[in-house]
Image (cartoon, rainbow, N blue to C red; front, side):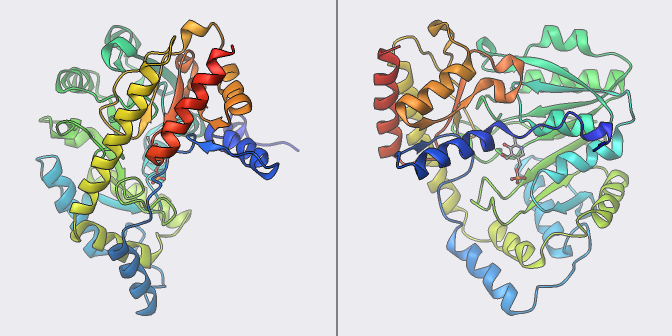
Length: 387
Ligand code: PLP
């Protein structure tokens, strides 16, 4: 069968491939510890679930406007603006089924074939996929471990040219947990204004942070007019399966993205949107509780990894991933990830699932219980000892 060029390079997400193998091993009776998939292990908070069920019973089971229910757009605009010290109008908010469409559709709306799009490597695999589907030229910029996994700005400066139309940033980052500082954001913002490119800032982990608040590029004067923020409910409120996210962008772009939603998914499920209003307006202490639990797990995992001979691991400042350096073992990331699944029964991801600059690293998700994390560390130690 002949398929279009635009789907020819699409590849599965590494996490799903490892999950499939791990599940097959479980079916054979193995006791696998899952540190591969990036989703909260908590249930959605009860007040949110109740609001969703009530909404179904009250008949919120029909189409809504493509860009989302008015009240939800208003509530998001207020909350997202407050968190970034900036004013956001509800007409700039486009509600989507998950955060992914808030990456994919703005890219489709902005990129012409041949436009260059710079994105982080290692980075979330959807970035490269959406650039290629849009016909753009993917241009990876390496993240540097010694810069707390910030952009290699020397390389970045050289990659920018008049064909650069969009730069994707992700802070806190999947897979590294790194956070971009204000100085780096200002550097990118200055170049955006000089070279007239857009910035797509994926801030899905903006509330899962372990030190101070993470700055957003949209708060830099002049940037709101050329920034798309991607954010959502999946990680903060443990709502991955509800499919609820949003993009914040200039109104004219929001109109085009809404049209893409109209003609693809139509709209986001209406009861999910009602649950989203409760998520933002309800008790936020639950988020704080979950974040301090992740912090505890992060510290146990990262300390444990740093105590393993041959491994060193930066302390992630956000998200729920550790990204240890494993170069001293002299094996590639793919090989070592597979070895640890087979020998230690621990499922984790090779850094190469996130691009070629992920070579030399593994990604372990610490959205798992303290007991499982400690057991995983023990098993990894034994398996590495017998290398
Ligand atoms: N952006 C990043 C960096 C992610 O890690 C994820 C999910 O893993 C998403 C976006 C997508 O989130 P959602 O499940 O809400 O579509």
